Length: 373
Image (tube, rainbow, N blue to C red):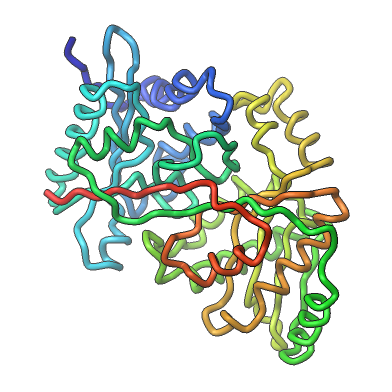
């Protein structure tokens, strides 16, 4: 039976697009559903400022009268200007195990991208690095963090069958915390802080944390500027993500470091794992989603290491060690025994070697694919 492709040009269409993963993964015990409202807002120019430098289109695939898959396409103009390339992005691709469906979806997005004058397509990538990116290709029996992705094992085969090859991988680690921070590490951190006259900034309230939010995004732009797929975020886009994420952060799980001039040179953002709570919430805050989330924030056993950034001039000077040590103190107070990293680009050897100092497993791998026309 033929697959019918339907462009998503109305709110009703976009709701079908956003709903499909909830149906596809309904019985899957590892998929972590995002908030449906957030997903829907990310697809619309009126509520997502990334559309100011991106063109995008979304489609759903219909087979046997039901939605059988979805795909989006993005032209990130700022990324192409930065890299001197002409690449389009596929985004938010999901499909049943049917190559007719996946092939038709990819061909539809490829045509739209090619008609825009692009020379190739890569992804899945989102509007920014804080958006959905990559396909899970290893680690299907582990619960992802809320900042990571989950896919079914057949996705990789479908992508390769459609002519896509590897462009870049991200790896993720699960860390087991020791019973206590070694005294040697504590002394070394104090030496580094004294040598460079560094100040660790602690937070006790979200209001206090939000006062430093834009500083964090400015540092993120500096620290991540040369990383794969990254595009700097302006104030409007930063505000979008501050509003989306900062309200759920436990401020005690965020640590920042200032230099002797009071300039921000590093931060780490962690969060008690909300994965199981989000599964119970099923994509909605009401009626009980908020309750499950608040309970997860109170008594965590697992913490997610969401984001770390160090100013380029301060990398390899011990700043990251100070941040994780200060964060570990809070983790111990809350009874955390394990930590999950989000995706680390496989070529980022400094970050990877840091986490390998812990009792760890490298349990997940995600991939960005590429295909030239």
